[in-house]
Image (tube, rainbow, N blue to C red; front, side, top):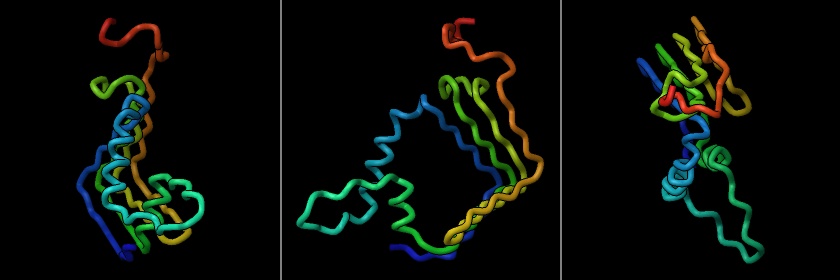
Length: 128
């Protein structure tokens, strides 16, 4: 287990995620499994595998703080190459804190942008 009192400061962080990236998640999980300790051996039925979030909570303990001058989070609606087809959350002066039992988020100049036209699954944006 890792016990920490951690503060990370970044000028800018951009995060993109969406169902179009789901094929990459199993590969990420394989990488995480390599760095996490194996579960204790038991004589009973094999334990149910934990999700990545529960594994992380089991492995890392303590206070964590992430300070960002600019944060952009995109929920991709189509493909990673069409960044304008996304729900966009942007903010400045963002501080994310996690302590045991608490999660705090503070930000300034918050902007949420949703594509202006109805999302039509019948026609790919590259063919418009």
